[in-house]
Amino acid sequence: MPAPNLFLVYVRDAEAATAFYGDLFEIEPTFTSPRYVAFEVAPGVLFALWTGRNEHAVPGTARTSEVGLMVPGPAAAVDETFSKWTAKGVQAVEEPHDDVFGRTFVVTDPDGNLIRVSPVD
Image (cartoon, rainbow, N blue to C red; front, side, top):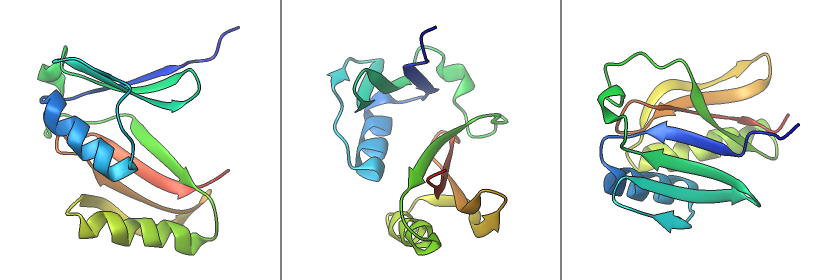
């Protein structure tokens, strides 16, 4: 059975979201259009931004999913990422703390989408 290979995030402004995620994850898009932008995050796996359903991309909308970034190394690597991102002005939702899977924190993009950083499983 095939595995999921497209992870789509609704945004209100594709250009602004591309700049945000490109800077945050230090990646460049592999495909750009006015309403859809894709980043290849692994061979054949895309993380994409789409304005096609941007009525859902408002900060007041409850979020039930998260974009995840697992960082290698000790718990200090998670704390270092938090410091680096908040220095860029990223809004924290949950400060770094220990959870059942290790050190973690959650921030939000300008549209209210949640981004969790945690250690590699």
